[in-house]
Length: 538
Ligand code: NOJ
Ligand code: CA
Image 1 (cartoon, rainbow, N blue to C red):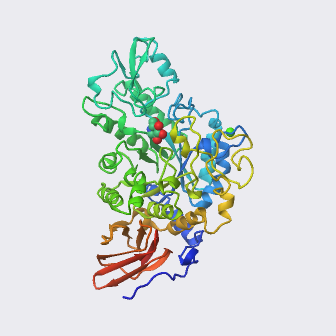
Image 2 (image 1 turned 90 degrees about the horizontal axis):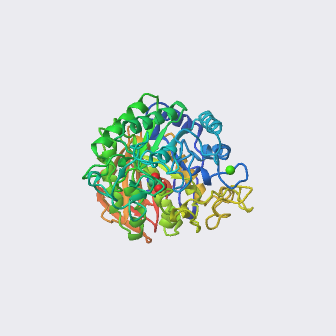
Image 3 (image 1 turned 30 degrees about the horizontal axis):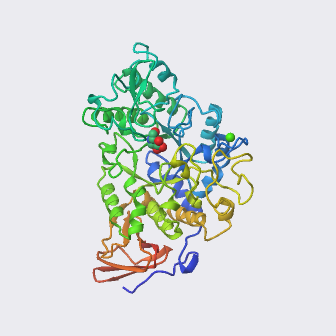
């Protein structure tokens, strides 16, 4: 077969690369609507992580809020977003950006009211969009009334709701208990009670004691409360940490049982989904249990947090290992794919300020087997900020920029709670919308390419073991179609060959490159930092 590729019938992108139209066809939209109906919807959805505080302010106080988010739903819908994950929206002193909850059944006043939340739910539903909320089960804020009571003395009604000790450590709850994730000691002295409490994170985030039956019941009731409000599911914060034993703190048998009891509640409602934030960064397999009794999805940090190393080294092995791990997940499990989040650097930094690397990483996120979760602002390649009032992670939590001009860049008419990141005007939606070569235009094309094609969410995935480790290549396939995706991690043109049989000729439908077969040898050529999606079948 002769070399082919390059000239597709689609719109031509910059420098001869092929770019699909930036909006899906009505037929694709109809197919997408069908795929997004029923219990498997989350396999075909594109998720978007919203940092409500930084997305859109509606009342000029500089703090993003729920009415602001409602006003941007049409933007998200048009982008191709099907489901939102809202970072914590419950009342919080904000010692850890809302991951310190002071009331599990109310809305943070700076974000609005419960009526505003209900309106968000109905406006999202009216657009066919779903909403997942962040559920922080492991710990509360120290301002929570439960902790306020628990800390008073050893005999109050909530005395056993948290993890207490006479000394700064406890052997029966084992590993990790001497050091917290964020500081030196995980034990803080409470003078009133003359005891120490355990906090896996900041001292303002005391760990709940799940061996106290009232705690276990209360948090299950909390999940029912939000399901009754109509949420489509939960992103479960550090959920592996709920119980500790003498030898392990991560996903011990009691935690697994507790997660199963949450899943049973969730399964009592139609078409809901749960996504786990695994504690371990390289293997989320245990979070899926048998495939249908724990999480529907779990974040793939093996790719999401380490793709920058693969690009910087020009070696695909990290990505390959992430894909191999995911391919061994139990049936029913779905990988949740990210290239950034509120916890790590902005993808722009991870890509080394290189737009082509960034595009390659986003392309992998959207085409590897799984469900992509876009972190707000990634579609415009939001740059990092410099101010860190809470902690270093604030650099990736700066306000969204909507307009090119104006001090508030369309985010606020007041003073933003956190200063904008670098180049706020250039990375605004307004500026990028007008530029066919912008990151936003690229994302639109990427999402339009996926839309209504089941293969991306649920098709099989097979690595193509090219002899050049600088190229990641894999085949995605289902009964209807197959594609070959190839990304060159290196900043120079590359060519790789593998022994493989492909189901058809390749036609580039996105990017730039060539694919040739001779006997049972397949050769892929890509330009420097190049990428290509070849449609092999039909
Ligand atoms: C994980 C969250 O993503 C992170 O932002 C938070 O600090 C910790 N869990 C503690 O809740
Ligand atoms: Ca506001």
